[in-house]
Image (cartoon, rainbow, N blue to C red; front, side, top):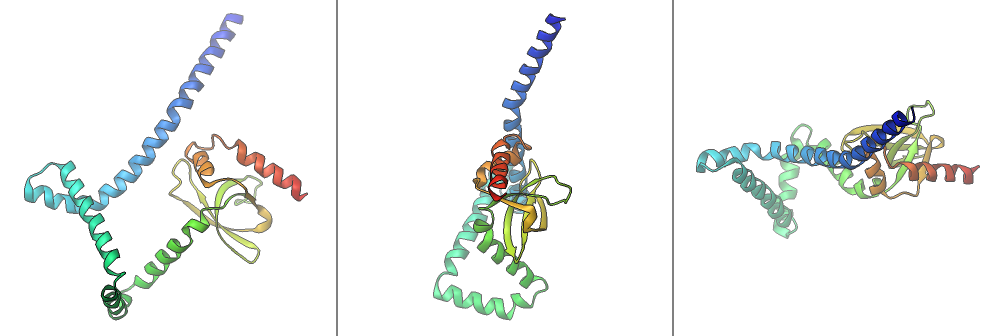
Length: 207
């Protein structure tokens, strides 16, 4: 029985050790694949044109297409910083673009996200978003009166998630860096000990 217990203990420790090493690598590969597939899907129509026109391989066509998109974004951004570019953009937007359905909604959303992203995702919290006593790792987007607007990311993909509007009594702001919370999300909750300890400490102080 003692031998079987030792074998079981050895097997368990070894298996957990392997998971500890391989899981972060697997999650990292998953995140990179998600980003790569998103970019590839965006540039594939342009790369197909180069591939068919110049008979080059797919990798080179994708690189050329990506470089062109980056160059266009940079040139456009630089042009609208000039007086002429700003003048043209102002008149085109007001006379043409703003009349297109959905343009105003999209631009307002992008501008709000661009202006608030750094500030919003700099605050980590634990909150009872489902009202059953369980806590969710989340990021504070904004506060309106006594309600917080929270983004609760899904694990292990923090780029997707849900928005919740939660009363401040159910939200505990943590003195935790964003990258630490992100690591916990990417690791499917592993490494959340510091978040829980910060939560307990703050609750004790408040009481």
